[in-house]
Image (cartoon, rainbow, N blue to C red):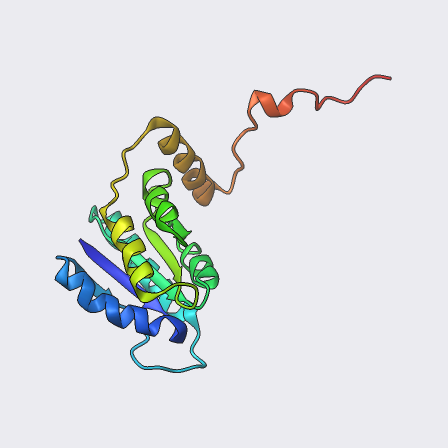
Amino acid sequence: MRVHLGSDHAGLELKDHLMTWLVDHGHEVVDHGPFVYDALDDYPVFCLRAAEGVAAERADGQDSLGVVIGGSGNGEQMAANKVIGIRAALVWNDATAQLAREHNDANVISLGGRQHTLDEMTRFIGIFLAEPFPGDERHVRRIALMSDYEVTRELPPLPESALQGSAPSDS
């Protein structure tokens, strides 16, 4: 599988570690930077490129995934999610790494390089990459609602349960 990487200075150590780890585990790596430590770099520059790489390849039918890394992972996730077709999940433990794929078919994960040890983050990435999306109907339906909104900008209709009791009273 091809894995796109992007980070900022806070994620550079993990990104550099992942380059070797991913290749050792049979993955092809695309490094979108940064390539040197710069405490003033801007994560969107690198994370948007990683997400764009994943989106373009998935649109071409490839099974690419991405990993973006920063200090907390929050901004990096937000940046990646600006790219059409990307579902980036912030991962902070084994369960969120698994559920990102199993329930959300996330194609990018974001990690906080200052929040976990190198071993923990490597384990999260391994879980994410190994977990298939089973395609359960309810998850496919929910993902479709988000994808449709991303394209049309039209909100999905409210379910009947949300409409009960919302009518104004006559009294």
